[in-house]
Length: 91
Image 1 (cartoon, rainbow, N blue to C red):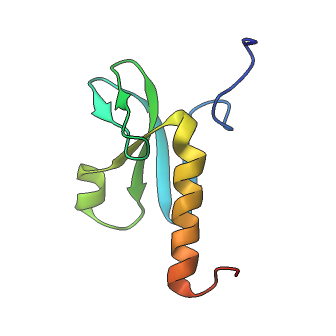
Image 2: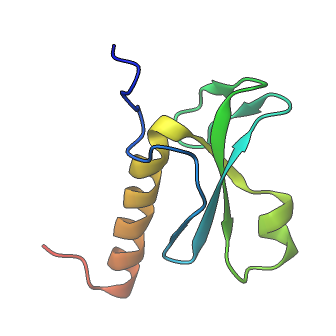
């Protein structure tokens, strides 16, 4: 695998803002579990910490944590779910 190949579609773990979700790229200080895949996030591994904008303290205190390689799938699933709830999903 070439050294310039990136697993996630985002080159660095920058902060993303998608449909009211704030996804911050962080490095794990302790072990966590990936919300999307269920795989462990090990100390020193980079992942996205996802909070809902304007949702208060609960989202900040208990954010979703997703491995970088699964962030696109996680966000696209949540976008589809939001469209279905609003009745705007394409059929």
